[in-house]
Length: 102
Image (cartoon, rainbow, N blue to C red; front, side):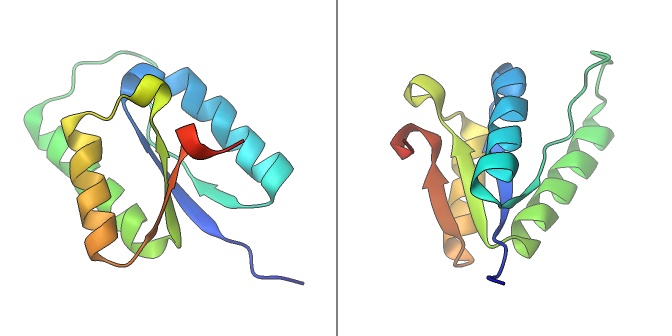
């Protein structure tokens, strides 16, 4: 049995629905284990303290994964995702861009 790759999804929350679908396909069709984003489906306001806590948790997800899967639909990469890419790259993580996948 080959080692299962663990990937963390990174992308703008405006692509939340797409990220869920991409995660499904990655696990069901490619056999990778996906660490998902936390989705605020209730659209609750997010205080700054909670935003910081969520960001810290997301960076921890990057720490424990093998690769970061960047959801860059229409080439869009926002500031937060750009920072996540820099962090992942500096920590030796493989970068997989959705736009370059078949």
